[in-house]
Image 1 (cartoon, rainbow, N blue to C red):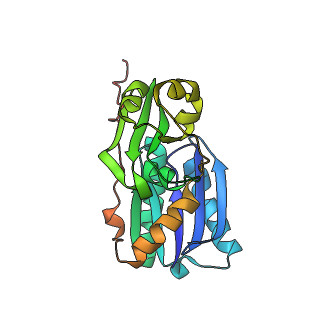
Image 2: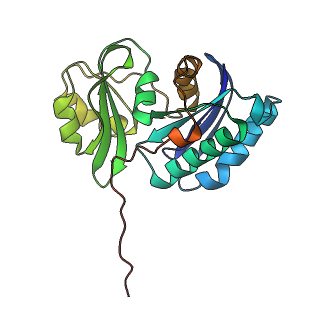
Image 3: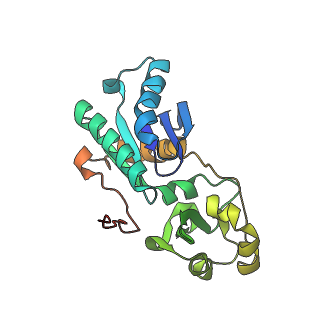
Length: 221
């Protein structure tokens, strides 16, 4: 199944064209707060390089969050537009699920950690074969995440790298395997069999995964 995958959940944005497990092409853009300007040109470039028109893509996948409010809106609305225009199925996924799916170097529990700023992290814990353990992605202090992580956890994500020394002191046998920072290609490979099995839906089925509430401040007089 040939599909287009989009991740704009962080500054490390990416778009990938995947045919089942084969990556046909990928565009990576470090674009904090600029996804609205670079995403569509990146998609156009990728499709042009593959000599494809949007109707020739058989499905679409997008990272739903947690992450940047603006980035998520841009990515999801773009995929919704493509799905609506082509009539192709769409599938969304947690960015932490895809981050865990990108882990290399053996099975075992995975602690996916992403910087949420303000001294907080987004996190989720996964068991063997990438199955989430416990509750959905959460937001909180690093100490909260580390208190729940089992010994020997593979720790991945930008926050895992930034806090490696602390993690090593808190999680016995903590591992730090390679993982993908740019998630679109992994997202595409994750989504292809699920879309083929009929798990996709219409563009209206895509909803952002907001873990942190909107930060709306009253304008000063």
